[in-house]
Amino acid sequence: DVANRVLPGLGYVVAFLVVAGGLVFNIGNVGGGALGFNTLLGIPEIAGYFIAGGVAIVIFLMKNALNAMDTLTKILGGIMIVVIFVVIVIVRPPLGLALKETVMPTAPMSDLGTAILTLLGGTVGGYITFSGAHRLIDAGITKKENLKEINKSSVMGIGIATIVRVFLFLAILGVVVETATSAAHTLDASNPAADAFRIGAGEIGYRFFGLVLLCAAITSIVGCAYTSVSFLKTFHKSIEKYENVFIILFIALSTVVMAVLGQPAVLLVLAGAVNGLILPITLGVCLIASKKKSIMGEDYKHPTWLLICGIVVVIVSAYLGIRTFGTNLSQLL
Image (spheres, rainbow, N blue to C red):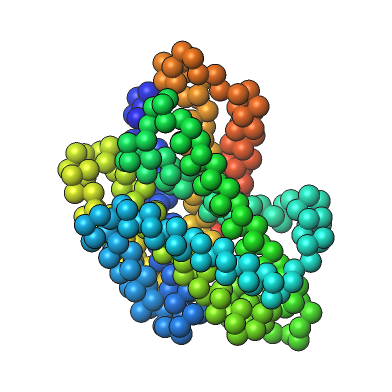
């Protein structure tokens, strides 16, 4: 709706891009769930695709699906944080090196583009930016009188996401350092991250990583399908009326495509790249809207520093997206 008020028809373009990116991301999420089941329980990947998709579908078959979704994400999110912290304790990452490389990386920026875009797209790209906002809208938490609750929700959301990613980075860094100092070993190409955890943190670290991957995948499948279909509701009222049915169909399609394509590890990287490519478009629309009083109201003033930072992110993410998307796509093909 906001994009349509910026430029008539733009909202439908944005909705299409977000849904298309959400589908790619959800296909990758299903693959991530299969990798999680395989690592944690040894279940074959092809069976893992359908189990992961089936678990997510069950949520939306429940009578109070949205509350079930909220509860599930809280529980699985908590499990992820605890398990990742335990892995950090086991692998003991070099914190000084992590801090130094975060501020002054040794590798040239040209080598970090794909990693940055994948992390950016997988954290705040595509549908992800809108998932919390759409849930608040569906819950009726809107308008000025609820601004405090909205701000609290947004800050908490990005805060928890940041903590999880910092913890996960430290855990993986410890694993990488341990792997580099161990005897030569060729990682399993079908699930390289989990195999690295087995080398760096032993069998318990390997299983813990599978649990983290599984929790992340299930919450992402549920959140991605819900948010993507919430965009589709703008196209026709029947989609809103049968929202849960369309969400289930969205998950089922993602599962079938994943089962046909395979290569879950590659698809997870491609999914992050696709959503990173969508980020500059959606953020650009929001920045333009933030300066229009006809949309934001007469008494709203968008902070200049936020506008400048937003413009920088749009430019950088657009450059990285165009530069790396082709590379990731060629890996899949």
